[in-house]
Image (cartoon, rainbow, N blue to C red):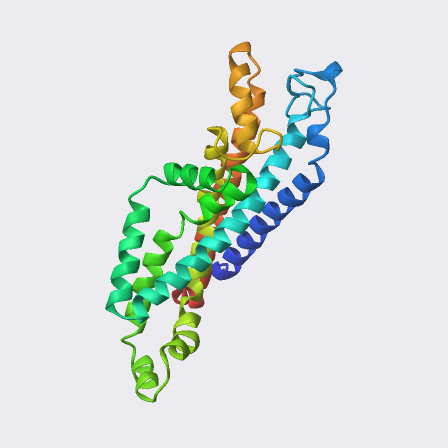
Length: 274
């Protein structure tokens, strides 16, 4: 009996995970208005057929608010992860190709950023940028590039010793041309995998900072806002206000983790014969 192709199975899982995340993002964007509609005649309803996630103390549908919050978190995650990955690619490549002095300065900067706890650094940058959407995006984007930058720097240091790179340099190719034509194509798998794996960190830190009151404003249906507001009502038995949004956040983060791991396997050259 023929064994199923592992790369094909991995590709199917990647596409399914991406489709689910896209569906959540689109559904949340469509539910943003519905998540803010108040109706005091249906307030504090437990989960039922009409309201699967229940309603809150203002009669707002928790399913619509949860989807809207996840959609907002996904948009922030896409933006911040993309900025962080590009910063990591630029700094990692520069550190490995522009000489020892540049490498020393960028390594010192990387160690400095990594030495500050992520949550604290995100809060400080968010406050400095005025909080809100712009503050959260700046805080998360400027604090999550370090690990990927170190990884890409190590890859570039190995690639620099490759014979074809040495030949290109001796033929008079500039550092920029060598990096563009010979280094960046080999860094693409690591870059894409790192980009995907930055999503769960970005989403969790955005929700954490917002939960602590240093992120998005309370008018926005963010997951951090929902969880923060629900803490006051847990002692009254309204468990659904935090349970379902929390599970939705954990599920989204876990799905991104699976997507990143499967994408890494898919881009691994050793898996071509599986």
